[in-house]
Length: 449
Image (cartoon, rainbow, N blue to C red):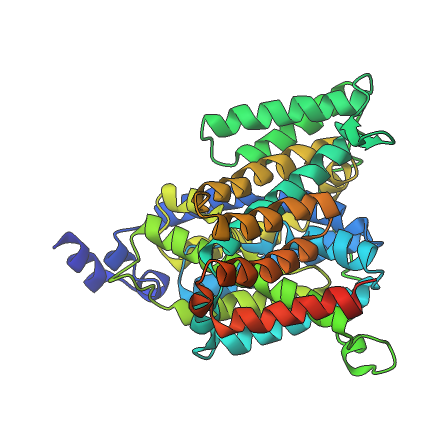
């Protein structure tokens, strides 16, 4: 009765976002939006640091990261009306940098074009019924394995950047030199962040980075910011993703690039679907096993990816950290609007972000802890069924071992149909999986160098 009365008295934004229906208020939504921002603000430092390894300017990527988050989160909040925030995704930025640009030798402007094309394809799938067919075609074990493998890969990058793991001529990898101050700082940061997460503090990863940076400044391992507020840096890569698509002499339209586009699409597609279901379940939106406005939510995610590519960053996707805002009481798209405003304001904080992003030991805790969260997907794999376990294991373990997300996915998709055929369950494998089997097999034989 109280909610009904509240609905009748609603006006403006409260009416549009249906505060009364969801039993929420401006105060709850604002607190939830700020909570979500704090939970995922680490991406403002981690993403520029990651993509700078691909030869991109840190300043420009910072601006692109914030703008992509603002656009994606606003579209999700206003169009789909979900309390879900978006930003350039972890794992996808690592794939962009280490697999596509460094591994395949593809220029970063062409890599941005690949992100743009994947976003356009995603949008087409989101506006049709094809998306359900694809989701149902990929076995759940491979989905969980891909997420876990990306987590292991991200954690390896973090440990390497902090100097905790280093190259070893005898064993390939080994422990780094613990007499280095930055390595000790990285270890300290990981421990502090882990303890904050154990205490279930909202924004634990963000606060972990902040504490690590401050301790680093105290001991002279991290530079003190020259200031705190300044005008946002220029997005130097604005529109660069468009050129290679229409330049048929650039070598963009190759079999290798199609594998890259598919990987961008695959990871974003299932990461988004998983996040939507997880956040919606926690918020109580799931009705009769169906997610209301699912098409709008997926379309919002694809629009965010397109916008992110156009301003100059890797794939933008929905963040599972949005559950922090839901736990704080967020129930409508207004939560996302508040988070978007926070990202917009963060555009003026580049001097602080620059100091953090330039020190691998400071961002390492975020990479390792995100890896921990993603690796939890291993528990969802049916390990007692070898026909499921073998391809899942290869998918997960080969990502960090080959330093390539695409390779892990490709191997898993090749082995899965084979194990199911030998098991006598080949008829249960969707035809899309057989199609992808030949695509990835051709990739290893004819495309991969």
